[in-house]
Image 1 (cartoon, each protein chain N blue to C red):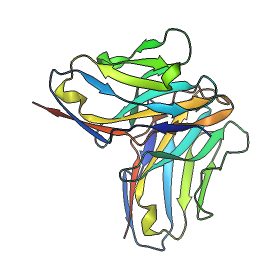
Image 2 (spheres, one colour; image 1 turned 90 degrees about the horizontal axis):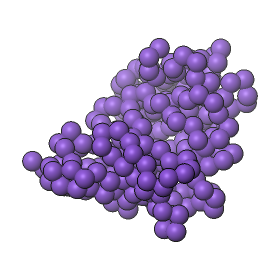
Image 3 (tube, one colour; image 1 turned 60 degrees about the vertical axis):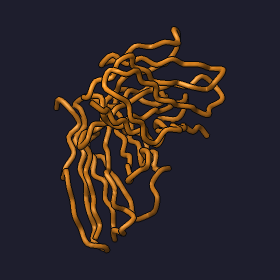
Image 4 (spheres, chains in turn blue, green; image 1 turned 180 degrees about the horizontal axis):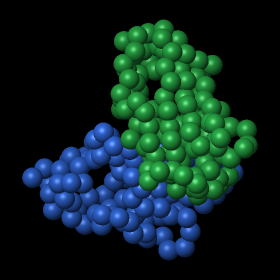
Length: 113
Length: 116
């Protein structure tokens, strides 16, 4: 069965600093990969997804993620964080034949002024 | 509708009572999912509906949990004889298509359940 690990429960960065949130997955074939963001009291919003092709994908709000098959990783990055980026970020994996996505436990991002 | 709508947004109940949580998916979305988000945990899959197919109930934690989807649209998640460990945010999502892991889910804002 597939699994998703987000090793960092909580990260604090200064506004304007760069950000990288880690995600590792366990799945035999090429997975479908997603990053979602959840602001307080809100549902989850899709940031970006990877299905195939170029391993560097661009998303909304200036985020990008890179699929590295050799490392089973799909890390999320942003060159300059804004205070409004403070939220919880979830990595998710989908696989062929299984309809439901498997989510990681999330990383809570705090942004310092 | 424009988005996935869930009600109630907050529900406080006493241990042992039954609760119903409602989800109204995006019009035209054939797939509907329920997830549970407990404090400090990720999202736990509960159940999946796709069109007229039999639902995938593999994530339901006990027989106190059930869900139905009427007319291929609105869904109700029912928790019978609630326990304190049922306290969580219950998230509903919908998507077009189904049967693959490539579905892009659109989530509602969730129903926060507190069992006293």
